[in-house]
Length: 383
Image (cartoon, rainbow, N blue to C red; front, top):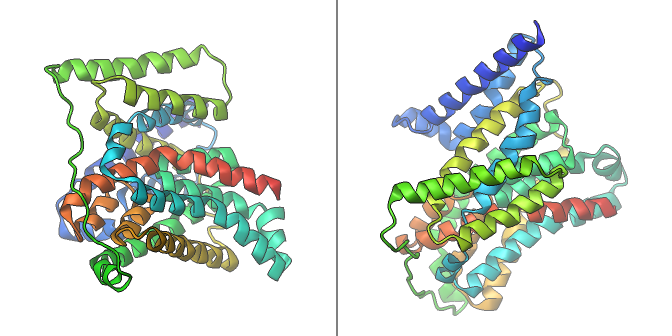
């Protein structure tokens, strides 16, 4: 098949996959919803193109779409996600819950490096596995996936140069663990008041509604300003030569400024745009996947399990030390690991009034995930 034919095939496959993923995520069918509880729709975006290339023995790993994704779509996603956070909204959470949340993020970012060192001290063959064979490159995307979600996961995959087969295996493991963790957090948050009582912690909290955009500006004007600004910045970046890492840093800062300095910025719209582009990126990544060697070493799986449990333990100890409502441990953990959909869902099992707080923490997680992942990569570089 010619290069043009491969490009057309890849384009049609990616678009069809995106349409399917967006459709199945909205289907009101009990069976489908049950499947999506354990196999999220976004994972189809990665697997469907991979299954097609595998079934038809077609190599689509070199088509132009991959360059477009790295040069345009990923930077666009970073810009939109980062501009979704309003610093003013952090006031509805409070200092202590944010500290608990940040401790959870810090443990996620730093603990894998310490665990690799400990595993290596226990058995020197682990140094060969994680360092010499570069399996640590699979841990960096987990940091991004847990803290920042799909956007950070994809960015850190690029920055750590994670091999495709390893990334898919990590993606599957991550999906399984997060779903199990969500179930556990549902159960934990329902019982958090018992711990509060046992540890003498006041479980009361102030309810503050998130700020609502004021003024008479029409929705059309708000959307035009938001979309026009994003488009102008993306065009401007085309004329400014930057490395991939530099573009990540610059667009992250610019996004934060946009979301906080423009009074009529449409935060909901940029989140929707980011959600769509994440699915698109995943579908393009799936074109590179080779199902051969789809496996993970047992020691790596054990390390990730220990990592996840200790993340929770450190958050729990921090909450007790600060004497803040233990429910924030579950909320903060799901904001880190689950994201903007599961964090408020778990929170609603405790107090529905806390759902806006959970969303703010989840957004804070989204915009900080890449930074935490860069710290992880830096620390592994020291080894």
